[in-house]
Image (cartoon, helix red, strand yellow):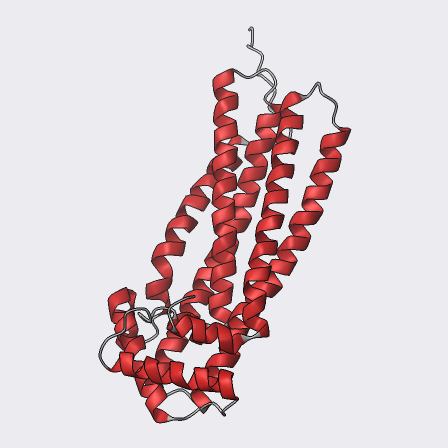
Length: 288
């Protein structure tokens, strides 16, 4: 009985693994945007926070109450929204980290398959290249989600204040923000002592940006190192394996661009860690 020869599979590449990784990534991508709101609500009183309008209203009211208290410690309502926002970002960061790992694995598999698709048709090669490019774009998105949500979990007070309509406040919030701006301006211009609540805001605002500075330094080291490795491999690769050379060059250029981006991110956040009072005043003035 004659048997038809089975075409050899590309070593290290499993189509089933790619399908599983892609399906897992799709589930995680949906979860990262849909799950944290409800998972972060520990009490029935926080169920309304799933709707952003209710959360913003709660933040506005809690902030006014906190400012009027004159204390350093959060009021119960302020603590409730800050604690919810911490859990929200912690959950979202956790899902984003898993998503990032899955997408890195998926990108690796897709690009490896593209480089080894020597005898495949042009359509299959184009499909693999498109899948690899899409996975890489989603990997970048996942990385940004990790950075943003780790930042929010590290300094949830500042993060939740960004929900307030500081550019167009109304009612009691408008009066409170005017007082905050006045005290911050006096502190910056004359060195007047700031109220306890502003001390908390300044220290948390600095921490909010320090978190990004630290992550930007780590990412810059990773991307610069990766860029060096990729360009060295590109230089050592002969002109004959064009797909391999093209892929290495594309990834080397991407790593270089990402390195520049995280350096810019580092510089943008560094000024707010050096002078958080000025940065916080800019925030409450609606300029940052």
